Image 1 (spheres, rainbow, N blue to C red):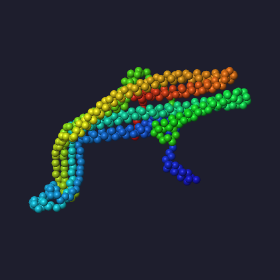
Image 2 (tube, rainbow, N blue to C red; image 1 turned 180 degrees about the vertical axis):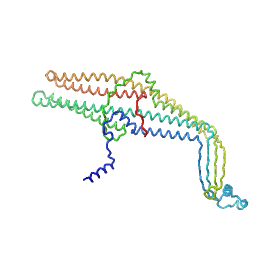
Image 3 (cartoon, rainbow, N blue to C red; image 1 turned 90 degrees about the vertical axis):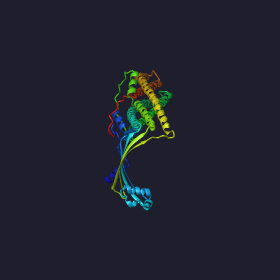
Image 4 (tube, one colour; image 1 turned 90 degrees about the horizontal axis):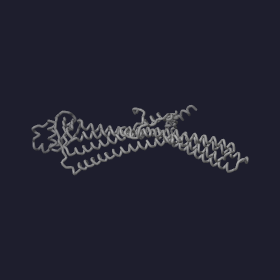
Length: 449
């Protein structure tokens, strides 16, 4: 038996049946932290930052000297190659000038090793502009990643709040179904005893069916909210997740809409990223225009020649190279026109992004204002609906009202509780949404991957 247990355990581990993550309840801050470390979409954006950093390093390296080494081996019976090989190997003799040997030298073997240093001296500003563009693109990627972290944190918080609300919604629905079931049981007994009309019994049963349907809908919403939280956190859907109850948020904004818009334009990472992209496209215009300017390179090399692998014959050379495209079939003009159009496109995009930021702030500001008002009304309405149920129950027990009035009162109480729950959720999410729109959403410190 112990061997069978060990074998079964090993088989399960082989299938990857690991224990569930977050077996213990975790809070909102822990959920946000986990999402920032495991959300796959966010991790993909982080890799884009690494790629942009690599491209910036490549562009910066193009301005530095390049030192390379090469080795080549050749066999040739070309008369010029054969004589040049002997000359490079410093083996030319008087007999090598005999016309017959010059014209028919046979096969010559050459092994050449070269160490070359190449330094770009002048490129018309192309290398500097390329490096500047790459630096701005690296800045853009970093800012986009920071914004993606803010969005992921907001999504994780919203998913947690949705799950908590769905749990409370299921409790409300179950309370309504429990009360409806009690009425159905009571009216059924009274109908059998002939103390009430059958229509009251049927009314209670219809009400029970409706409340049971609401309970099933609430259960479905709960499961959907739980799955959405797993997706946001970067967890497999088959893992179990439990969430601790969150403390009520009392944060509110007293700043004016104009102040929030001003802060958003200064803080929003995506808006700053758009401006960095605009600078990058402007630098590309300089890169394209540099094609009409000369390139100057300095080259120094050391060479070793032998008829076998080795370093017997050494020679060195130093030279400067100046190159200029005189005609390229309109290619450079096309590249300049393209770069100018892309730079102008980004200028328009920056303007559009500014308006988008302002719109995000105004929409979040208005939603939060509405959520505040809605929640205040809903909270008061719950108390009124609860008191109404108490009074109707009392009158119904005294025979002063009919069953349908009691069922309607209880249904109104359930709806009032649901409305208060939804409005409270909108209020809590709305507070985070305004911070996200403003670019001031607080995040946990990023850990080193």
